[in-house]
Amino acid sequence: KVERMKLLAALLVASMVFTASEAGGDIPRSLMTKGNLYNLFSTCFGPEAMNEYYLGIMKATKYCMSVPTPSNPLFDSIDSLATSDIENLIADIDSDLMDEEEIGLLATAIPNHKMEMRTKMGNLSCVLQQMDYLTESMQPNIYTFEQMKERLSNTIAGQDDEFVQAILNGYTDCRDIAASLPQSAIDRYPAKKAFARVKFYVKCMSKMEMKMCYKWNFYQGMIALKGVDTAEVDLGIPGNKFDVATGAYMIMEENWPEEVRFVDDFFMKRM
Image (cartoon, rainbow, N blue to C red; front, side, top):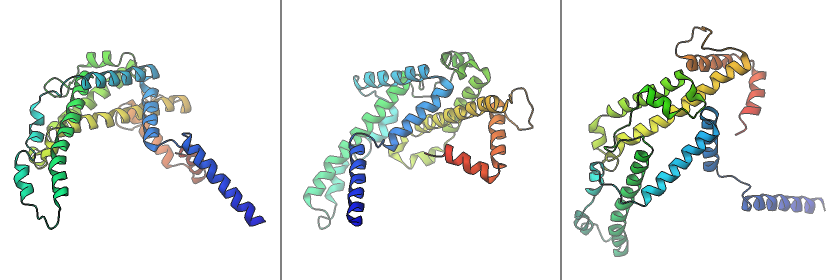
């Protein structure tokens, strides 16, 4: 009887888990990541600014899907990949290892893949231009301090000139690093050649914005939780007030007793 009860309990739990999953109880990690990113940026830019930003992305995406894929020299390398020569190349395939159906599928799939790459990258470049990240010539759109301050004028952190300058410096660094990528390394990957520098710049820019938002939170946390404004107190740590606040928190955490660390990890690392 006890074993039967255990089995029934196990079946009940399994049923509850399945039902919760079917009802959306299990949130995909990819969706959680997007939510966490939204919440992070909301702390330093503000919920209203983030809603406006995401609405801008959706509007730009809708517009770019309604217009032809823009013609751009950056896509020439995609067009040159496996062009009409594909028929000659496929003719050399050992038919003992691939049947005619597989060869025919490959002949159809390669052009389709090329078109899909061109469409995706074309739409993305269009959206980045609509969002003023890139110029019409697909170059990073670098702002002056006044322009960046205006761009961030409706955000919380954008009211802080030092934060605005740090974001501007980050954009400039990302542009310079992307421009310094060795052309010889890019040329070895024709499929990536079309978008390599732009992709590096955008990825670098996104990581820099995340880092600055985290640092903004550490700066605000030092004021709220420790009563220390690193803009006014010299702690002997190099960098701006955001770097100092982040460094100070890291040093404090490194020196916590294990009991304190255990409790902090229990509450703050539940993800």
